[in-house]
Amino acid sequence: MEGESKKTARSDLDEAALYFHKHPRPGKLEIQATKPLGNQRDLALAYSPGVAAPCLEIRDDPATAADYTARANLVGVVTNGSAVLGLGNIGPLASKPVMEGKAVLFKKFAGIDVFDIEIDAPAIERMVETISALEPTFGGINLEDIKAPECFEVEEQL
Image (cartoon, rainbow, N blue to C red; front, top):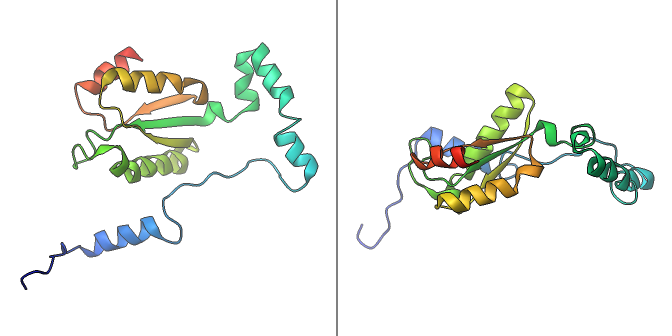
């Protein structure tokens, strides 16, 4: 009928995937504490004032970050969304479901915790600068779905 917008027909798999990603809570990731937080003492140990002791240990010996933080088992999966799966250059925001998917695969098959990081940085220099600035947070960085040849240049500069 004229004047009506046509909705693209979706397959059963598409509908199931949309529901899967949206319900019961949007996305595929959450952050969960690894320590008990049941009382005031637990909270004081997790944050202030107790957090000062591991901070000072790490300041004095950076290698101890692996003993006192999640860093050693934490990977940043980083993309600018310029070469996603068979979808092409869909941009950073639209690539987020793919990066969350990569994160859950890391967790399921290797027990590795992942933060997906979608950056709006089409220029190589900006990507390198952003990723380099995140280095203290992660034990590893996984460059994902960045178009060639830029992906090789980013990796080389890092």
